[in-house]
Length: 461
Ligand SMILES: Cc1ncc(COP(=O)(O)O)c(C=O)c1O
Image (cartoon, rainbow, N blue to C red; front, side, top):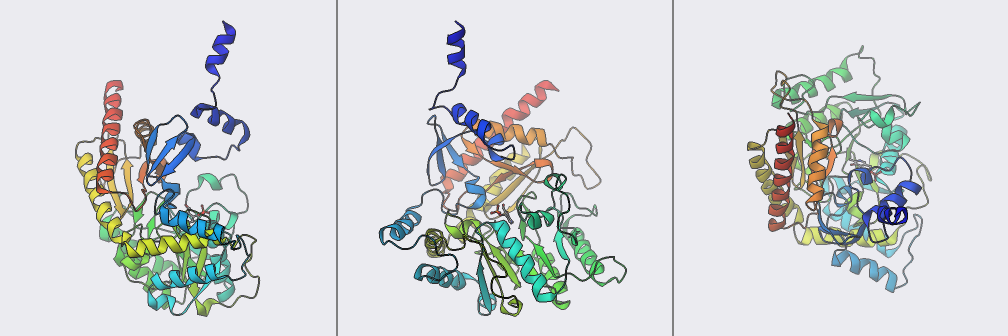
């Protein structure tokens, strides 16, 4: 009898639990996504993934925004196969190759001419965080200055320097001696405006404050080597900055000779409805950081920057894995496919449709504070309406409820991730190849999941 019970409790190879148990046994305590998305993925195609038990899911996490064309897109597979079949080198450090040359040509071709015509590119090592590290070193070297400005709610990665520029204090708390001289400024987050103003007024106050900090000789902060920002904060809770604010920040930095670094790691290649998110406002940045989608599912990251900053010397930022040829080939294929099929326009259209449906769901929900986003980068902020709102009518975040909604969605075959303050924002980050029909199904699943969670909430209160 005991043997039977033991056997029943011990998961077998074909079950999610088998892999999750092994994962827990062998992998670090620092693992993150599996805690909220406890499945083992066996196959993947387009927006769909299948777990080892044969259950299908709509993948609206898409490798945290990496999979612009979804899983295993034919043009990506073809590009990788071409590298393999022609015996091209797989890895070349930063030695050039025809594959690399083609990638640079395609990337420069889709960047706005005002920027690309005088830009240099650095291949990094190959994560977004390494490109952030490179960008900081670049502007520090070029200006000879030491401090960097970042924003509340920013996410720039998990390496020591990038973490220093990140807003979320939780992963920073246990790491002593992060990079010094980083200063955080208020981002225009209307729903939780730090000035309790919100809207245009809140954004205006933010830019006034930035200007004040830079110009007040007693602000306590020396003139920075650079300012780094996201046009839509992703991990911070899907917060799109207004175009007027972005314009103001560009003027403020330009007038004072401060290099503006735009982190497009998550927003780049069409996700927000433009090929690059900075194009919404039409500014010309000094430095652009790209990763995720540009490798067409494979690891690749680059910093593209104004040639006037190119003052560092050979080897100033190096790293072994800067020559992943399959990633460059997959990236070239991805860029071409996005451009030929105008997927950024599709992202804008379907993003608006998705946001419209989520706003309809909000009308019948007691726990959605705000639906916001740009293109196919959408967030739904889950709030506690049983508590009192602040003077801007914003309710406190409700992370436990967000987690339950995420869990109910997963049960119904929809993978979503959480972000934002306390993890209370449900994030939709589907591949750009998502169809109208799929958007409808995704929203229906979300609707039934949120209704189910709210019914339980009513029952227990
Ligand atoms: C805006 C932004 N910058 C940087 C990073 C770090 O990229 P990576 O995780 O590849 O190091 C991320 C990752 O999500 C990001 O969203």
